[in-house]
Structure formats: structure tokens, C-alpha cells
Image 1: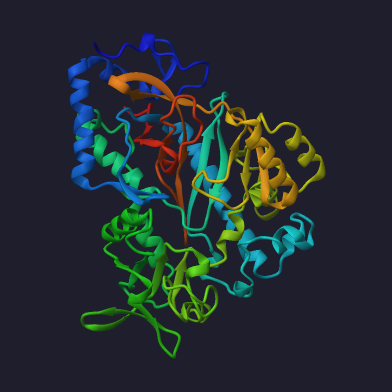
Image 2 (image 1 turned 90 degrees about the horizontal axis):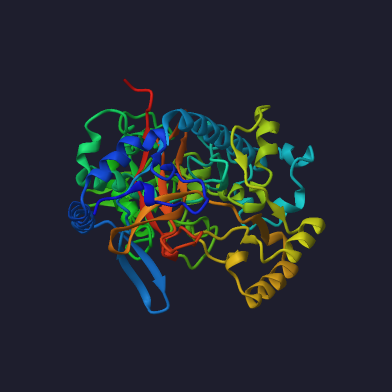
Length: 484
């Protein structure tokens, strides 16, 4: 039996593909018609082909457990998510605006702090920020840009509009899976790519290379760019290796690099030492340089901060960029856009309650069963309370956490996250909630991926999309519905 879209019910949520039973939204019409033409046997064949392709390509991620680290095949759903190009162009403009303002904010914090002096951001928020790095004060990176690679999480609410859920400006991951999702889908559903209506995404590695190359302190034709990884046991190691390979850059660990007495960075090679110009680092600030941060770190490079401050090497993202990767700062981004750019925000934030504010905290504590509570600086879906799915015991625990450290917690309404049709057991079609992580690059110019990484909560009714928490993923299609 083939897919019958008349039987598909999104449960009252805004669905990305289907507007009402049997009716596909404009960007999804060709896809919906094609999927309906496949019988059950053919659909199963395509699903198995996707699984085999993932195995063949070695697309995996690591889950940390009490029993140890487990490598798992990438969880992939066959049915793409579709968005119209017209809507995406508006969204991309909002993402560019947001990153420009965030970079101006970070640069201001490490210099004049006008944003504090003018009363836009309370001083104590920065003084108590775990990601503000006093060691970075006075440094001006190339183009005044600190966060060169940003992964911004977007969600669609019941009104069908995109809202920003959070900004990831430290070491955002996931872009390799966006690219691999497309490669898998092209193998499994090649017929759908025969026209130009689906916008390509394969220019990302070249754009990333150009963004990094523009940071080089030396004006050379081919700057030496390396990807600095913590090593094979890191959950995102697949991505580190993938991006290095795609850019033609060297993948290095801290022990492969050395800083000499002139504060220049070199890479150890079989031919001797080679000067390094740009480091795309995938390790956290505190492990970067044992001379400055964690003295016991074996992941970083002694002297790296000296070389960076001297302007002899570029680091992307720059140390200290994480000060804007704080869910409390997130609440102020609309004001930052107005303050630095004198523009109205093109993308809206999700309504956010700051637990350090007495009135907000009282409301949150009274409504823990209805809200999503998040710590200010965790990632990966850890340390959260999803109120409607929590127990009284969970709520009591979070009430104590909030009272003991209100600065560290925010709360947001439980959104009616959009859904998309997803193949579950026995190729049954059911709605699953999802989000979207586009990637924005800023160097000389600003670039946004065409779409991004769609993450899916594979458990029925769940709102948690992170792969580390059992989530899956889909290819994301930006469809030009006006193309001839």
C-alpha cells in the first residue's frame, strides 16, 4: 500500500509538508505526489538503500554513556523537509542581521563596553558570564569578527513563522550532517533532483574555506589552514575530518602544533615545520592553551594565545566569542540589533523569562509544569526541564536550582513546534516535531547556508531533537516554487 496523504494527520500542529489532509503545501507538491506513487515495497527498498548508504559512507556520531562512548550510525529519515525559497530569503536576511549585531556586541565587550555604559546590557550579566574571557580584552581580530561560524537554531510555531530558539557561537556542529543528508537523499531519490527547483547546498566547504582564508595574517596565495580537533573520541570527530577533507585542509590535534619564540604557529609534518596561518578550532576555549587557561589541558597548544594576540595566527571562532552564546544574552539580541545596526529585527526571539529578574522568576516557579527551563550555557539538550513532560520531583529539583543560581536559568513557553511526515515502524507515516539549524559564516562577507540541518524528535510527542537524546535528521529542501 502506498502513502495516502488523506490519512495523514498532523494533530493540529503546523505541518511543513501538508496543509490539510490530502493537500501538500506548494514547496512539497512534487515530493508528495512522487512519494504517493511509490508502493510499499518500493518505499521499503528506498529506506534500506538509505541505511546502506549511511553505512557505506561511514556517517556516524558518538554518544557518551556511563558504559563508555558508543559510535552510532547517523539517524536519518527518508522524507525531506521543504521550505519555499521566498520564505528562506527573508529568513536568511534575518540570520545575517543577527550575526552582524552579535559580532559588534562581542567586539564592543572586549573594548569600550558602550553597550554596558549605555544601559543596554546590565554589567553584572557580563561580570558573571562563564564565557567572558578577560584574556581577550583589547584584542581586535580581522574585520572585527569574533564568531566566524554560527549555528542558529530556528523553530516554527503554530503560525508557520520562524523564531530563533538560540545562537551557537562557540564551536557549533552539524553542518557535515546537513551535507551528508543531501548526498544520501540524492542517491535514494535521484528522480526528484532532475530539475533545478531544489536549491543546491554543496558550496558550503568552499565558502568556509574562503571565510577562513580571508583571516590569514599573511598575504599569501594559499594560506595554511588547519582544523584543530580534540581527537577521535570527540562526538563530532566525523565532522572535523569531513570538513578538513572537503576544504583540503590538514586535520590536526594539539600535539601536531607548536608555537616558537617569535610567537609563530607551526605544524609538524614529515618534511619538518610548516607555518600555520588560520586555525579552525573545534575545542573549547578553556582547553586551547595550557599557558593561559586549563594548565592540565593536553588538547591545546602552549603559546597559542600569545600567537593569536600578536596577530600571527587567526582563530575561528575567536576565543571569547562564547560570551554571546549565553541564553540570557539571547534575550537581549533584539535590543542589540537596534543598538548596533539601528534596524528592527527581521527574525523574532521566542518569548523568554530571565530567572534573575524577580518578577520573571516568580512566574517561572509558579508555572514549571508549563514551561521549558534551560541553563544559560549548556548545549546538546542537557540540563533542561520540559515542563509538560516532567514529574513533580523534576519540578521541585529545578525550583531549587533556579533559587540557588537564578542568573543561570531562563524559561520559555512550550512551543507548538511544527511537524513533518516521518517514516516510523513498518514505514508508517506519522508527524514528528522538528527544528532547523542553518549555518552563518562571517568574515569579509556574510553567508547563510541554503536551509540547514533539520533535526527531528523521533519519539512520538517529544520536543527534544538532539541526536544525543534520541533525535534524527532529514534533508532540508529550499524549493524555488517560482522557477520556470
